[in-house]
View 1 (cartoon, helix red, strand yellow):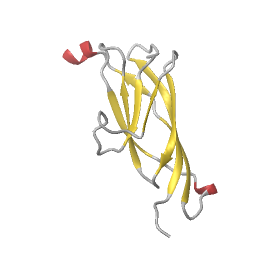
View 2 (cartoon, rainbow, N blue to C red):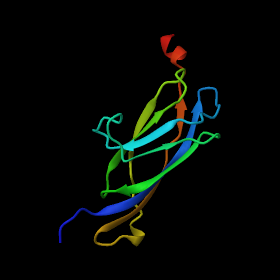
View 3 (spheres, helix red, strand yellow):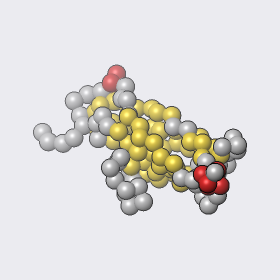
View 4 (cartoon, one colour):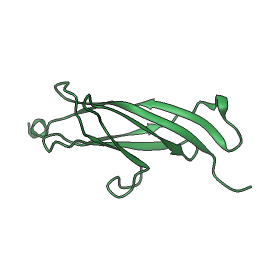
Length: 116
């Protein structure tokens, strides 16, 4: 039998500005850490009016993913973080590695604050 073990993941969180205001319509991309996120991503979701998002998908075994946050406002800086998916092996099998649930919150900086 040939193939690669897979697992299900859920990455959720919130996006706020430095002032603590919810950032709506921010684009959240889940991608490979070594792939350019503007070219390739496993999935793309957007934050709701409260700045919340949930990205669900399938991954190939234990791995790291890059979560990229791109705000719709040109006044805010984009941000990214690399996350290790920690799979719950309780329901794992020979080709299913389990499920992973991670929380990733972003606090985006204003472009003006970088010039100080």
